[in-house]
Image (cartoon, rainbow, N blue to C red; front, side, top):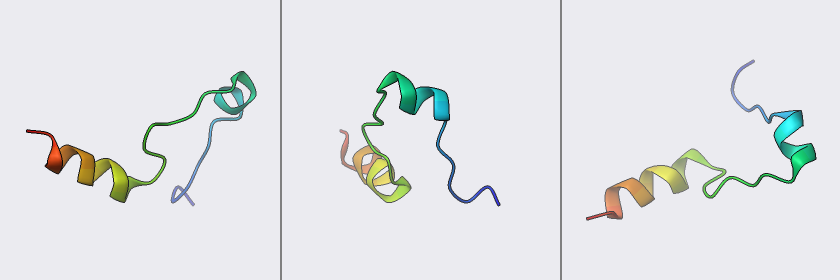
Length: 33
């Protein structure tokens, strides 16, 4: 539980996360200078 969740409402509205995986998000944060 809680490991992976997607908001049904966001999906229905067509929202897409820029970094859907935590690894990608963390890498982007580390690379941002």
